[in-house]
Amino acid sequence: MSTATVSFQRLFVIGAMALATSTGAAEDAPRTAGPYVPTPQVIVDRMLQMGQVTATDFVIDLGSGDGRIVRTAAKAHGANGFGVDIDSELVERSNAAAKREGVADRAKFYVQDVFKADLSKATVVTLYVLPAMMTSLRPKLLSELKPGTRVVSHDYHFQEWLPDNRMSFDVPEKQEAVGFSSTSLYLWVVPALVGGRWQLEVAGQKLPYPVTLTFNQVYQYVNGNAEAGARRTDIGNTKLRGDKFEFAADIGPKADGDRYTFRGTVNGNTMQGEVVWGMKANAKRHTWKATRLDAPVPLR
Image 1: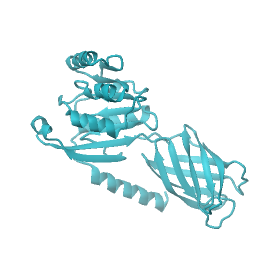
Image 2: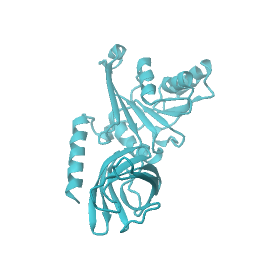
Image 3: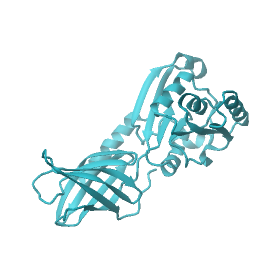
Image 4: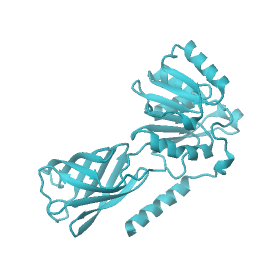
């Protein structure tokens, strides 16, 4: 393992430790539900705003309680979606409320274990569940949700998977229900899998050597290196958000310190896009493609 990789991972662990709070042992938590605590409407509104919910979205609420998150997504934003909860009375109440509000065709609720919910349609997932359950749900979300899906949580986070955004504010009406009024919301964007080795091609450019890209990935954080023959250079300026990926490396046809910026989209075992060939004002643009050489490493 390179020194760069060790430093990257050490910095990541320090950041995760700074964010983490004491959650208790996962085995002590119920598998599918905690005590029912209704989410104040002001928090529901902020969660949907944070997730940038629109009429094109499909919202899934895990542990949906009285259904107000999915119902609000349907009423205020025109979205479709469903919620799951193991409490049949709450599910019945949610479906009845959706019918009264005229959104039963777009907001549905089911009695179901959250770990068995089908997430394939989701573009937004919302959560207000116990901390240990957040950690238990993390592998399911990362393996089943499409890259780019937004995940919004009320008060609790995913430990080592650091959020892409966070906001805190005071909600006095929470005091009676949970004993405190401070509120934190967290947003994650599910990242594509880019870790491993990739073979690079640049259209219209004959590179002097085959170029192999190696990426080290910790959720949405990526670093790596590029190899062109005997020459090896660090990859920098990486940005991964969903399936959109950007990085820079000195791997062009001449080793003069030029920085080549690659921007593109990850689609399974390929990524492709446009590269700015150099840093000068008249830098040329070319299309590029990279093909995965290793089996993808799942994020957990």
